Every structure is written in C-alpha cells, then in structure tokens.
Length: 399
Image (cartoon, rainbow, N blue to C red; front, side, top):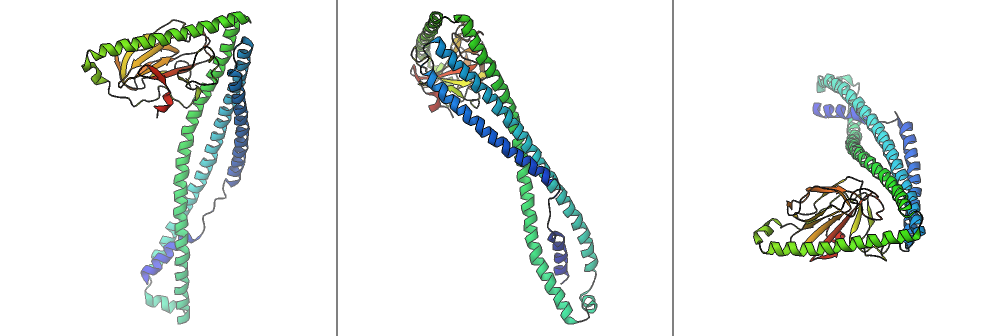
C-alpha cells in the first residue's frame, strides 16, 4: 500500500499539464514572417528559372556581339536575383533560429518548473509515507471513504501515466529542436558562403561584359576575331592534351613500376559543386558551340578557390599561358585523365605524382586575369574527364 501511495504521489506531480504560453505570440509572429519570406523566395526562384530559360535560348543563338551582350545582360539580372535569394534565405534562417531558440527557452523553463513541483511532491510523499495503514483507516470516518480514496488514487495513477508519456514526448521534441537549431546554424554558414559566391559572380559577369565591350569597341568584326582566337586556343589545348597524354602513357609503359601508384579511379569533385554547374558536357546551350563543342562541365566557383586532384595521378601538363588559357592535365590509372581549365594559379610540377584531394592550383576565369583565356564569362572551373584520350561526361563518374 505504501509503495502504491508513493508511486501515486510521484505521478501527481506530472498530472498538471505543462503549458507554453510564455513567448508564444513572439514565436507566432516570427513564424508568420518566415512564411512570408518563403513565399517571396518562391517568387524569386520562379523569376530565376524564367531567366535561365531565356538565357539558354539566347545562348544557343549567340553568333554576334549584340546577342552576346543580351545574354550577359540577362546573366547580370539573374546574378542579382541569385544574390537577392541568398540574402533572403539568410534572413529567413536567422528568423528560424530566433523562433526555435524561443521555443527551446520556453520548454526549458517549463521543464524546470516541473522539476520544482517534483521536489515539492516528493517531500509530501515522504511525509505521507510515514503514516501506517491503520492511521490511514482511522483518519477516514467510514470504511467506504477509505476505499473511495484508494479508487481515486488508482485513477490518478492512470491519468498521471499518460502525463509521464507526454513529458517524455516533450523531452524528445526538445532534443529534436536543439538538433534543428544546430543544423540551421550550419545552414547559416553555408548561406554566407553562397552570398560571397553570388556577389563574386555578379561582379565577374559585369567585368566580363565590360571587357568584351573594351576589346571589341562595339565592333562586330573584332568580336568575330575574338571568337576565332578562342576557338583556336581551345583546338590547340585539345591537341596538346592528346599528344602529351599519349607520350606520358608510352613512357610509363616502359616503367610499369611507376603505374603502381596509379591505382585509384574513384573520382571526387575538384571543387564544391553546390554553387552549381553553369555548362554541361556537350551542352546544347553553350554559347560558342557553333565554333567548338564543350567537352567538359563548368563548375561555378569564386576566383582563387583551391582546386583538388579528382584522383591520384601524374601531372602530364601544367600549362601557364599567362593571360591565355592555362590548364593542368593529370593522368590516372585505367586509361583515365582529367583536365582543369582556366586556372589562375598552378601548384604542381609536370612529371610529379599527386594524391587524390591534393591542392593542385586555384580557380580562375575572371575576364582579363591570368589563365582565363579568351571570352571567358566569369570565374569557374572547366573540368574534363577523358577515357583513352577522348572526353566523357564527368557527371557519370563523380559521386
């Protein structure tokens, strides 16, 4: 009986429901603001999608200076929207962090209040536990009153067990919110990097337009000359890469022991792919496709971003072309090779062995900077994957 009474009084503590009134209106206001900003984000992303479609259509027809300028104008507007979307996302996550923090604070206070109640009820249980069964019967004037008390305590046990489960749910929700808060803070850091990237790309696109205007002086003939030079530059690079790779593999075949290091073809991304891919393998919307195919993917990245070796390999070429098209060629096992184009810095030496993930150089592509080459449209990494000397789609081999 004493044990039953003890359990009953313990459950009495939890019987009173835990309420979260403190700060609720503030949380509600924050959540309403968050919903509004999510709606704004949807509208901005829809505009971005519309711009992407327009740009893709125009790029497929870029064969004149006027059309190239129109594409760049659209890209500038898209970059502005990207920046606006990232800033709005940042503000939204900040609001979400405030909302979650308030909810956690409220629940923490409620749990603390529950603990205080537990301490008080335990004290009362201790005092009640000092009474003998005979004393409890004597304190009731009639025997029926005694049994009524026992029935009441039994009902309390059932009710309080439900409240115990509710309290456990509360603790679980609290843990989830704390984890959610931690994830939001990580998202905040990622968004800050995205804003930096968007800002850089916007400036680079503006610079690209200014450079083309400066180089062509609104002359269509000068623009066509630049296109021809860019095509020749790419043809020369492609020819050199084929020749150099074939020569290096022939040399390695004479020294099989050198191949022992080349045992890894599980490729990784050379730069973070999250900012996005701006041009795909043999992309039909590639602006200069009428002059040359695009044998790679272009990965958006800020100027100076570190480039990592996609797999272990030997440096077949580390071409520093000054303000022309600079690139790095790595030769890998099983007939594979990778090319990293528009590099602004080279950190490796031809003939050296590099390990997967090792920094080999830095991203370039900003118009008018070392390694960018002709008619580049902004900072990015031109990434090729070749098999037996022929370009293949890198996306089929990357994780």
